[in-house]
Structures are given as C-alpha cells and as structure tokens.
Image (tube, rainbow over all chains, first blue to last red; front, side, top):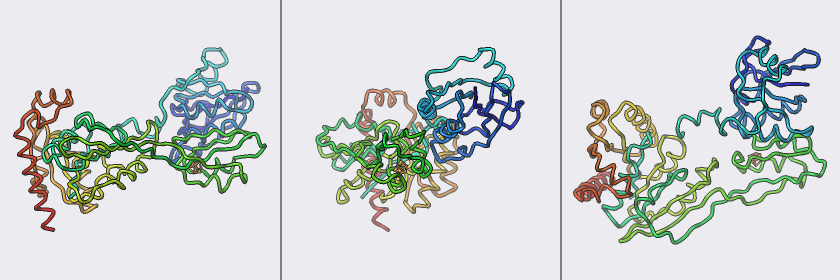
Length: 130
Length: 280
Ligand code: SF4
C-alpha cells in the first residue's frame, strides 16, 4: 500500500509535519517494498486552498492512505473523492516518519472519518479576524 | 457628512460609540459595515422593511462527459476547483467568480450561475434613523462585494454614521474610504495602543482626518494618551470604565440610556467635527 505522509524533511528521520496543506515535503512510502520517494510541497505557499491542491497531487501519486498532524475539511473532501475510493486518513500523528510507519504497520493508527481542524487553519485566521 | 467609527482592536466599544452618535443626532443614516458580524441592530432595533440578496456569478461543472477539468484546477489561483479523474470538487466559498475556469475549461462544460453570498437590509428607527446593514453568509470570503452593495445605498445628502468592522484589513478600508472624518475608538491598554497605531497609519495613508475616543478610561496605562499627545492626535472624548455601562450594553441599551448627558456630549462632538470638516 502506498502511504503519503506530510513531512518536515526528506528522510525517514524527519518528523511528521503537523500541517497537511502547508507542509514542507510529502513522503510516499510503499509498505509492500519498504521503499519511499519524496517531493517538495508546491502548494505550501498557495494564496488559499493549499490543502485542496496538495490533496489532488496526493491522489495523482496513487496514495491510498495519508498520515498527517492536521487535515482540514477541504483537503478531506478532496481525499474522499479519489477515483479508486476514499483515501484512508490518519490525522493527529506526530513523531518521526519511521515511527509513524511502524505504528501503521502495527495497526496502532486509527483512520479518522471527519476533519480535525477548521477550514483556513493554516492561514492564520485563528488569530482573530484579519 | 460621513463619519465612520473604527478601531484596530475588536471589542473596544466601536458599536457603542457609533450607536450613541446616531441616537444623539437622531436624524441620520446608520450603516453597519461589519458584514461578517453585524451587531448594531441589537442596539438600534430597526424595523427592517427591505432585504436585497447579494449574488455573484460562479461556475458549475457539467461532469460525466468524459472531459477533463484539470485545466480549470490548474488555472484557479484560489484553488477553488479540484479535478480528480473526470470528477470535480468545487469549493464555492473559495471561488472569487473571476470566470477564468470557463475560459480555460472544456468548451461548454463549465457554465455560470448566480450564487447568493449575503444580503443587505434597510430599516427605520424612530424618530429619523435610516438603518442599513449587510450580512455575509458564514464561511464566505466576499466581504467587499457585500460592502459594495452598501456603498451604493449611502445617502450622501444625509448625516451618515458608519460602524466599521474591527481591524485594518481591506474590509475596514472599504468602510472608511468615503468618510469625511473617522473616529478611532481604543482602550488604554498595550493592545489598544498597538492596534491604534496601525489604524492611524492606515487613515494617514488614506488622508482621512481622524480623532480618538478612549473607552474604558481608567484601566491600563497612560501610553495611549502619551502617544496621542506626542503625535498631535486629538482625543475627542474619554468614556470611563464603568461596570454599569457594560450592564446596559449587555441588555442592548446604549450609552445614552445609561446617562443622557452623553447625548449633549455627542452632539457637541458632531458639531465640532462638522466645523473641522467644513474648514477644509
Ligand atoms: S471562477 Fe475563478 S475563482 Fe472561481 S473557480 Fe473559476 S477560476 Fe476559480
């Protein structure tokens, strides 16, 4: 199974990035071969809808599951509409990529069925109205 | 004459001042420009007589036609369109209605329709306040579009009091840009001062004359007063920090109900502003 993780860096010792849409990198990990590739998240500087763009890319990459710290409702909606069926979403995960994969393999992660943060979490709107 | 009431920081008493001004002159137009969270109607209790929907044009996508909408998704600067396979996920709240996806998308498969984003309401509060407010649907980003609709209804030949949204973003600029004078309401705290300084910069840039009303006078420190003094900014009034004023407020009553003396004070304030505006 191909799993996509939001990551702060490009190795298995990087941390799971708490933000999905605005993370630094995505790591695509293949649990059947234990290999991975990574790509920089081009959506991180998007004006808005970063998660929407990032989620489209994740689907294009063929990931069947996503692991991240927080996944907003818009990204959620897109991930749910993948042509091969909804992408499994594991949110609220922290620590290194390596440990997240280990937890996934040990069935310690529970997929979530609704988004963990409000829309625009990543835009700083939490700081009062701007 | 248009007087706007603004504040950098929310919750400083902007609406309190705006309502008290309107209730002091009694014959004017009152506009609540805070379309994201309008609340002046709680105090003025207008009889709403007219409501008009505000709409924008937004695209819709004819899917199931084997056409790809990927170019729409790539084009949209606001990422309001996601294209997955031949499916489309559209985020109406993010769409600015620019029409770009119609131009770049598969011919005939992206159409346009009217979508409601809010409304404006007109009402009346005796004896002579023409009330106007805007309401943006929750989650929508098109604040200025609703404000534009308000702007079309400004009664330029009347006294106009504008209650602005808090902050100094574009929605605040939209609210103050037509005014002859702006009253900045602040509180004498470090937060109040910080946000006051930002508002002052904005108004100076817009070349709108302004003065300051210090609310909850008595709390905090002297920094706001010193800042105004050092920068030659006029302090129009100080409203004392009084629990009873807050109690009146929480019941939807105004400063004038609390102490009628404010009616005279605000009338004086308006006469003085008028003199200053006419001097120009
Ligand atoms: S109309 Fe403009 S903003 Fe709206 S979805 Fe199309 S391209 Fe994006």
